[in-house]
Length: 226
Image 1: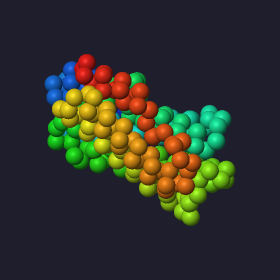
Image 2 (image 1 turned 60 degrees about the vertical axis):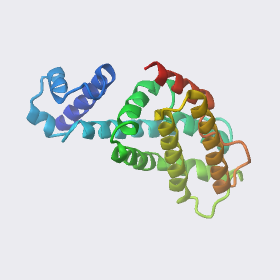
Image 3 (image 1 turned 90 degrees about the vertical axis):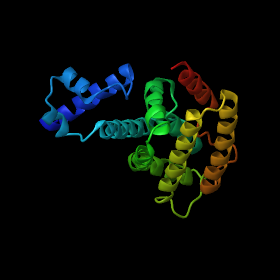
Protein backbone atom coordinates (compact mmCIF):
# COMPACT_ATOMS: atom_id res chain seq x y z
CA UNK A 1 0.00 0.00 0.00
CA UNK A 2 1.31 3.44 -0.93
CA UNK A 3 2.00 5.92 1.87
CA UNK A 4 -0.86 8.19 0.78
CA UNK A 5 -3.30 5.27 0.58
CA UNK A 6 -2.17 4.08 4.02
CA UNK A 7 -2.89 7.50 5.56
CA UNK A 8 -6.27 7.67 3.84
CA UNK A 9 -7.17 4.28 5.31
CA UNK A 10 -6.07 5.42 8.78
CA UNK A 11 -8.23 8.53 8.51
CA UNK A 12 -11.22 6.43 7.50
CA UNK A 13 -10.70 3.97 10.36
CA UNK A 14 -10.27 6.75 12.94
CA UNK A 15 -13.29 8.67 11.67
CA UNK A 16 -15.54 5.61 11.62
CA UNK A 17 -14.55 4.72 15.18
CA UNK A 18 -15.20 8.28 16.40
CA UNK A 19 -18.53 8.49 14.58
CA UNK A 20 -19.67 5.38 16.45
CA UNK A 21 -18.30 6.54 19.81
CA UNK A 22 -19.33 10.20 19.78
CA UNK A 23 -21.85 10.44 16.98
CA UNK A 24 -21.37 11.99 13.55
CA UNK A 25 -22.59 15.44 14.54
CA UNK A 26 -20.47 15.60 17.70
CA UNK A 27 -17.27 14.51 15.95
CA UNK A 28 -15.22 17.36 14.53
CA UNK A 29 -12.44 17.20 11.99
CA UNK A 30 -10.15 18.33 14.81
CA UNK A 31 -11.12 15.23 16.82
CA UNK A 32 -9.91 13.07 13.95
CA UNK A 33 -6.71 15.09 13.61
CA UNK A 34 -6.00 14.70 17.34
CA UNK A 35 -6.37 10.92 17.23
CA UNK A 36 -3.93 10.64 14.33
CA UNK A 37 -1.63 13.56 15.27
CA UNK A 38 -2.31 14.81 11.76
CA UNK A 39 -2.25 18.34 10.37
CA UNK A 40 -5.27 19.94 8.72
CA UNK A 41 -3.35 19.98 5.47
CA UNK A 42 -2.79 16.26 5.75
CA UNK A 43 -6.51 15.67 6.28
CA UNK A 44 -7.77 17.96 3.53
CA UNK A 45 -5.32 16.43 1.08
CA UNK A 46 -7.54 13.33 1.22
CA UNK A 47 -11.04 14.60 2.14
CA UNK A 48 -12.92 17.86 1.64
CA UNK A 49 -15.35 17.41 4.54
CA UNK A 50 -16.86 15.06 7.10
CA UNK A 51 -19.58 14.13 4.62
CA UNK A 52 -16.95 13.06 2.09
CA UNK A 53 -15.48 10.90 4.84
CA UNK A 54 -18.82 9.22 5.39
CA UNK A 55 -19.23 8.68 1.65
CA UNK A 56 -15.82 6.98 1.57
CA UNK A 57 -16.75 4.83 4.57
CA UNK A 58 -19.92 3.77 2.75
CA UNK A 59 -17.90 2.95 -0.37
CA UNK A 60 -15.55 0.83 1.72
CA UNK A 61 -18.52 -0.96 3.26
CA UNK A 62 -19.96 -1.71 -0.18
CA UNK A 63 -16.63 -3.17 -1.32
CA UNK A 64 -16.48 -5.33 1.81
CA UNK A 65 -20.07 -6.48 1.15
CA UNK A 66 -19.08 -7.46 -2.39
CA UNK A 67 -16.24 -9.62 -1.05
CA UNK A 68 -18.63 -11.25 1.42
CA UNK A 69 -21.06 -11.95 -1.42
CA UNK A 70 -18.33 -13.66 -3.44
CA UNK A 71 -17.35 -15.77 -0.42
CA UNK A 72 -20.98 -16.76 0.16
CA UNK A 73 -21.26 -17.88 -3.46
CA UNK A 74 -18.09 -19.94 -3.17
CA UNK A 75 -19.30 -21.65 0.00
CA UNK A 76 -22.92 -22.32 -1.00
CA UNK A 77 -23.56 -26.02 -1.63
CA UNK A 78 -27.16 -25.56 -2.75
CA UNK A 79 -28.64 -24.56 -6.09
CA UNK A 80 -28.58 -21.12 -7.69
CA UNK A 81 -31.56 -19.82 -5.71
CA UNK A 82 -29.86 -20.85 -2.48
CA UNK A 83 -26.70 -19.11 -3.74
CA UNK A 84 -28.64 -15.93 -4.55
CA UNK A 85 -30.21 -15.91 -1.08
CA UNK A 86 -26.85 -16.55 0.60
CA UNK A 87 -25.21 -13.81 -1.44
CA UNK A 88 -27.85 -11.20 -0.60
CA UNK A 89 -27.82 -12.18 3.06
CA UNK A 90 -24.03 -11.81 3.18
CA UNK A 91 -24.12 -8.36 1.59
CA UNK A 92 -27.21 -7.00 3.35
CA UNK A 93 -27.23 -3.84 5.44
CA UNK A 94 -29.37 -5.05 8.34
CA UNK A 95 -27.07 -7.67 9.84
CA UNK A 96 -26.51 -7.56 13.60
CA UNK A 97 -22.80 -6.86 13.19
CA UNK A 98 -23.61 -3.77 11.10
CA UNK A 99 -25.88 -2.16 13.70
CA UNK A 100 -23.47 0.71 14.50
CA UNK A 101 -23.07 1.54 10.82
CA UNK A 102 -26.82 1.31 10.21
CA UNK A 103 -27.51 3.63 13.15
CA UNK A 104 -24.99 6.11 11.75
CA UNK A 105 -26.61 6.04 8.32
CA UNK A 106 -30.10 6.44 9.74
CA UNK A 107 -29.06 9.58 11.63
CA UNK A 108 -27.12 11.20 8.80
CA UNK A 109 -28.52 9.93 5.50
CA UNK A 110 -32.15 9.35 6.44
CA UNK A 111 -32.90 11.95 9.11
CA UNK A 112 -30.56 14.62 7.81
CA UNK A 113 -29.65 16.12 4.47
CA UNK A 114 -28.32 12.84 3.10
CA UNK A 115 -29.94 12.50 -0.30
CA UNK A 116 -26.61 12.58 -2.15
CA UNK A 117 -25.13 10.01 0.21
CA UNK A 118 -28.06 7.67 -0.35
CA UNK A 119 -27.65 7.86 -4.12
CA UNK A 120 -23.91 7.31 -3.77
CA UNK A 121 -24.59 4.18 -1.70
CA UNK A 122 -26.91 2.76 -4.35
CA UNK A 123 -24.37 3.32 -7.11
CA UNK A 124 -21.59 1.83 -4.99
CA UNK A 125 -23.68 -1.26 -4.31
CA UNK A 126 -24.30 -1.83 -8.01
CA UNK A 127 -20.72 -1.13 -9.00
CA UNK A 128 -19.16 -3.31 -6.30
CA UNK A 129 -21.52 -6.28 -6.44
CA UNK A 130 -22.30 -6.64 -10.14
CA UNK A 131 -19.69 -9.35 -10.74
CA UNK A 132 -21.12 -11.53 -7.96
CA UNK A 133 -24.66 -11.07 -9.27
CA UNK A 134 -23.56 -11.96 -12.81
CA UNK A 135 -22.04 -15.18 -11.46
CA UNK A 136 -25.22 -16.31 -9.76
CA UNK A 137 -27.43 -15.40 -12.74
CA UNK A 138 -25.31 -17.52 -15.09
CA UNK A 139 -25.33 -20.34 -12.55
CA UNK A 140 -29.11 -20.24 -12.36
CA UNK A 141 -29.46 -20.30 -16.14
CA UNK A 142 -27.11 -23.31 -16.36
CA UNK A 143 -29.21 -25.09 -13.71
CA UNK A 144 -32.42 -24.11 -15.58
CA UNK A 145 -33.75 -22.34 -12.51
CA UNK A 146 -33.48 -18.85 -14.04
CA UNK A 147 -34.21 -17.61 -17.52
CA UNK A 148 -33.05 -14.38 -19.14
CA UNK A 149 -32.17 -13.31 -22.65
CA UNK A 150 -29.72 -10.82 -21.12
CA UNK A 151 -27.75 -12.71 -18.44
CA UNK A 152 -24.84 -10.26 -18.45
CA UNK A 153 -27.00 -7.16 -18.22
CA UNK A 154 -29.80 -8.20 -15.87
CA UNK A 155 -27.49 -8.24 -12.84
CA UNK A 156 -27.38 -4.44 -12.78
CA UNK A 157 -31.17 -4.27 -12.81
CA UNK A 158 -31.44 -6.82 -10.00
CA UNK A 159 -28.91 -4.94 -7.89
CA UNK A 160 -30.78 -1.69 -8.55
CA UNK A 161 -33.89 -3.33 -7.12
CA UNK A 162 -31.96 -4.62 -4.12
CA UNK A 163 -30.37 -1.21 -3.51
CA UNK A 164 -33.75 0.52 -3.79
CA UNK A 165 -35.30 -2.00 -1.41
CA UNK A 166 -32.51 -1.38 1.11
CA UNK A 167 -33.06 2.36 0.76
CA UNK A 168 -36.83 1.97 1.23
CA UNK A 169 -36.38 -0.20 4.34
CA UNK A 170 -33.85 2.20 5.88
CA UNK A 171 -36.20 5.11 5.21
CA UNK A 172 -38.97 3.19 6.95
CA UNK A 173 -36.76 2.62 9.99
CA UNK A 174 -35.91 6.31 10.12
CA UNK A 175 -39.57 7.30 10.20
CA UNK A 176 -41.51 8.22 13.34
CA UNK A 177 -44.03 5.40 12.88
CA UNK A 178 -44.35 2.79 15.60
CA UNK A 179 -42.37 -0.44 15.23
CA UNK A 180 -45.38 -2.57 14.35
CA UNK A 181 -46.35 -0.26 11.48
CA UNK A 182 -42.76 -0.16 10.23
CA UNK A 183 -42.35 -3.93 10.23
CA UNK A 184 -45.74 -4.48 8.57
CA UNK A 185 -44.77 -2.03 5.82
CA UNK A 186 -41.34 -3.70 5.54
CA UNK A 187 -42.92 -7.12 5.04
CA UNK A 188 -45.14 -5.72 2.29
CA UNK A 189 -42.15 -4.18 0.52
CA UNK A 190 -40.22 -7.44 0.78
CA UNK A 191 -43.08 -9.32 -0.86
CA UNK A 192 -43.38 -6.78 -3.68
CA UNK A 193 -39.66 -6.72 -4.43
CA UNK A 194 -39.33 -10.51 -4.12
CA UNK A 195 -42.14 -10.96 -6.65
CA UNK A 196 -40.41 -8.53 -9.04
CA UNK A 197 -37.06 -10.33 -8.74
CA UNK A 198 -38.63 -13.74 -9.30
CA UNK A 199 -40.43 -12.44 -12.39
CA UNK A 200 -37.25 -10.92 -13.81
CA UNK A 201 -35.31 -14.15 -13.31
CA UNK A 202 -38.10 -16.59 -14.04
CA UNK A 203 -37.18 -18.05 -10.64
CA UNK A 204 -39.31 -20.56 -8.69
CA UNK A 205 -42.12 -18.72 -6.90
CA UNK A 206 -41.57 -17.98 -3.23
CA UNK A 207 -37.96 -19.15 -2.99
CA UNK A 208 -36.09 -15.84 -3.25
CA UNK A 209 -35.29 -14.28 0.13
CA UNK A 210 -34.12 -10.68 -0.18
CA UNK A 211 -34.00 -9.91 3.55
CA UNK A 212 -34.79 -12.01 6.60
CA UNK A 213 -37.59 -10.41 8.62
CA UNK A 214 -35.83 -11.51 11.81
CA UNK A 215 -32.88 -9.30 10.84
CA UNK A 216 -35.19 -6.35 10.24
CA UNK A 217 -36.94 -6.90 13.56
CA UNK A 218 -33.60 -7.03 15.41
CA UNK A 219 -32.29 -3.98 13.53
CA UNK A 220 -35.42 -1.99 14.44
CA UNK A 221 -35.08 -3.01 18.09
CA UNK A 222 -31.40 -2.02 18.11
CA UNK A 223 -32.22 1.41 16.64
CA UNK A 224 -34.84 1.96 19.33
CA UNK A 225 -32.23 1.23 22.00
CA UNK A 226 -29.63 3.55 20.46
